[in-house]
Length: 138
Image (cartoon, rainbow, N blue to C red; front, side, top):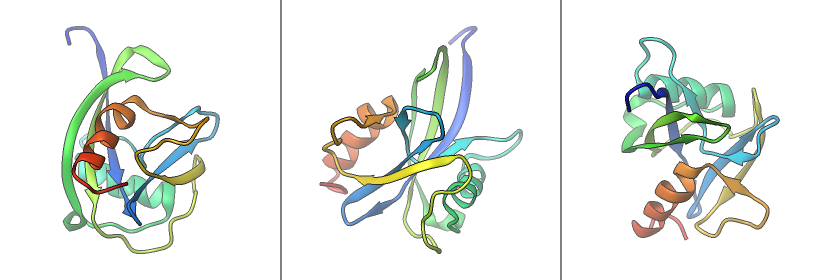
């Protein structure tokens, strides 16, 4: 990836009633799973746990996370940059999910993306099909 700038992020897959949670940040077009950029010297799991608290107000421990995969794609609004997304299944959480911080809207979706809803490419092309194939969502 030579001179390409990599933006390292962690994302979480929260599943309920065979649907998974996506959110859209204020002023953004695309829905993605909860999560965000890693702080310096922060592990992916630590970043995700922090982001789930900040964005959704839920508490997750490292033991509740299961590695789903690492995915790469051009950044949605900065095509010269590449996103590296470490994605984890969040098997359990404490608290009621609510939009907090920069999250403007959340929704539970299955493999049939609603009309007018844009999903970030990693989730549309990599995560959603695999969740469906593994029979975790409808």
